[in-house]
Structure formats: structure tokens, C-alpha cells
Length: 235
Image (cartoon, rainbow, N blue to C red; front, side):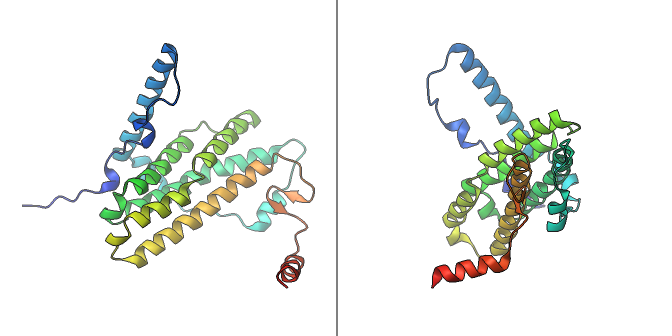
């Protein structure tokens, strides 16, 4: 008799937001809208665990990395075309990086991947992937504005990912047998998360005017001055 291996990452997860009650009273129309929206989100969430061909296809692609020099000299243009180019790069790049992390979650040991808190983070990554992957193409400054708002929302939704991962791995610590693999997973996940947030926040910062700055990059930054300043501080 052949054995059947069930991957926990393939099981549907009902997010905590679906289990919570209403935080405030809603009118009948609000209630209908809430329930229909909740149903669509739940259906998308459940379906995404079974139909992940898009994730598999995108995860097979390599990430295209930017050098600090490229970021710095992308500069600013009078017609704001730099915003369009930046958004178009993220439009193609972020789904690839997120898909790589989803593959990482799939490779976790069964007992770890089934932890409710880690499953919650896994679902957050899947949801973010589908939001960005299905987003309308960025073809002009108007669509760039819409895409930028989407990035803002996702950055806010994912702000507690590190805390959730810490809680999840703490909860299943006693079941861990291969700590080296877990450490490698966390290193890759946190490094990837840092890179994704840095790219997204850089794009957001390009919308603001700040002297001697290009996005999040300080054009006049001096490593020597910073080291000297910190050395004086600790004396």
C-alpha cells in the first residue's frame, strides 16, 4: 500500500480575522458588504493553497537585484518618469521575491509548518503575492499612484511579520530537530523581507522632496563621519 504524504502548507487556513466577531455595530447594508467581502477573501485564501501554479511559475524566475549605484543614479526626473520606472521594476520584481519565500515556507518540517502562527505568516505571503501578481499593469502615473497605495497597505499589513515568526518558532521549539535548517530558513526569510521592504520604502520615499536624498539614500552620506560620530558617543 502506497503511503500518502500530506503537506501542511497545502491545507487551507482560516485566518484569525474570519473568526473574530464584529468590533462595532454595522448597518444591514454594511453587514451584507462585510459578509460578501469576507466570503470572497476566504474563498481566495482557501483556493490559493490548492491552486498555486502561478506561484510555482514565478518562483522559477531569478530575482533581478539593484546595486546602490543604480538606485542612487536613477535620480529624479522633471516629468516624474522615475516614479513610473521604479514602480514598473517593483511590479515585476516583488512577486518573484515573495514567491521564493512561499517556496521556503513549503519546505518547513511538517510540525513547524502546521503551527498556527507560522501558517498565518505563510498565508500573508500568499495573499500578498496574489494581490501584486493580479494587480493591473503599471503603464502611466495614474496606475503608478494606485500601485503605490497597494504597497503602502501591504507594508502596513506585514509590519508584525518578524514578531509573528518569533512567536511561531518559539511555540514549536521543543519539536525542532534540525535547528540548522530552521536557522537557514529564518536567515533567508528575514534577509528577503529586509530587501523587499527597503525597495518598497525607497519607492515611497521617491514621492517626497528631501534635501540630499534620493529616496531612502542619503547622497552626501559619509561612512567616516558616522563612525567618528558613534565613536565619540560611546566614549
